[in-house]
Image (cartoon, rainbow, N blue to C red; front, side, top):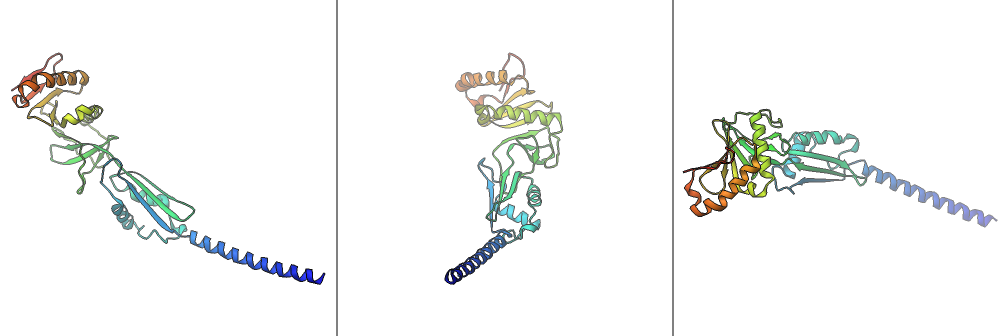
Length: 255
């Protein structure tokens, strides 16, 4: 009976020591999880734009006071404040910041998509994104998008929506061209002339295509493509300086 009692005491002590070691292990693990163990920073370049990269995002976080994220105590970490710091970059579309149970801090950033570059009458240049909001020109990257020039007075601040009827009409025309792959490839510039009418500048040739306003675009483009297929193919692109499509049921070619 005494032997069984001794064995029970020994087993109890062993189990107590094991419990203590396990508890210390959990405490150590919890202490590790109290800090950021790893930073996973990603910038989405899948759309082909390179306005920002991981180095620039990291530098912006450093300037905002979030320079040493790895090793930072979790109770000092403000995920919302980190997101707000990233959103201060005018090229950022979305930013997502989150932690996992292993102590990994993940930051995912997507860029705004420019669809139009505007050069106004003051020779100031800016982009308009797919949501119809302005964004600045980058010193390191130029997007291959349609350019709008001419009689455009708008001088918006970055992030502004399009305020004037003229600039909204330019944007709408550009959206129409973007929806048609052939037209998007055919034209490189939208010019607003002194009368406020739109002229399209083709990629090939020295002529412009005067369309007036942006109404009845399907009809106008159908006439233009028919003209390109017939007359201009035979007589050559250099024969004309302007193709006028603004009048209904007419095509006027000026030499």
